Image 1: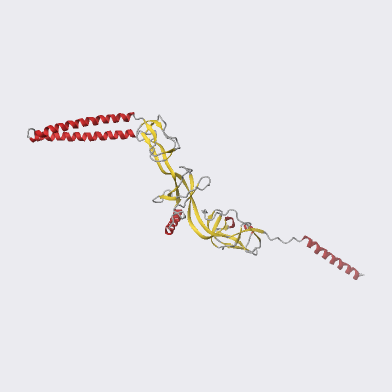
Image 2: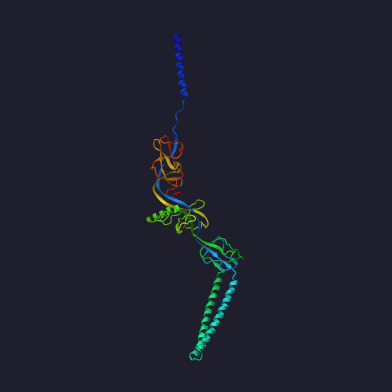
Length: 394
């Protein structure tokens, strides 16, 4: 009887154990799936590295239109903001006060000429008498002196008349160049030519070519100076184009000007107050799209990188100044790889060291990746790549 009871208990424990194992099998978690990670291939291509500098446009020639004599402004003979031609009449100033000066100068000249004629006549009468010793040498010398003094008076009067006529001509103000004229600082009827009324009435600007003045800091100056020296050795100018015009102009709306430009002037030294170096570049502007006073960015090619390696900026992780990417091999194994990033080119970054062409790097889930992990790589095309040969870096 006891033996049968013991067997029954053993059978019950065996059944309970099997039931427990079955129950545990039903509640066991499923295996963790391998995560799918987007990766891109390292891009290899020739890349131009550029740098942008903020500048302001101005006329390649900006000439102030000044009132060189005082008087009331009588007329304005142009359309403000319009084109003017060289020699075109712009303003007239009341001529009457200056015409009076001309008449006065003409009278003085006539008087001086009369005195000269009298002195010459007196000398002509005295010279024969002096030869006959009928008059003293002193009388002859006095007559010669009077003639010379009268001649000097005539020359002075002629100069005064010429000056009066020059001042009279200043009452008509003409454009010195072809260009665009701005809004007038003086109104018709206003007394001009003396402070506080405007002495500079307007400006005429030659806007084809348009000039852009921009400044760079000392570090950028050294970088560009080295690039310029390299371009000169290679037979090209700053800008990196095959021609000497290689600068791009990016306008305020983000568009790129149709014509390339070239540096035409630089400062003699770095400004010690601001620590900047000033340059000026000219850009053709045949359609007058750009006017003086606009803000724009000048894009300068500072280097040409042959077979440069580029990856998206978002693929790079940084920790305490150290940069790394996660390279994914064909088996999906992740390898954390230190890299040396170079200049940024759009939303891509040049890699100076650490990668090879054709490798694949992860562009998402970087915080969850670790060295040696296994993932399912999904190759994607990075849609915001910079156009080859037209890249921009910091």
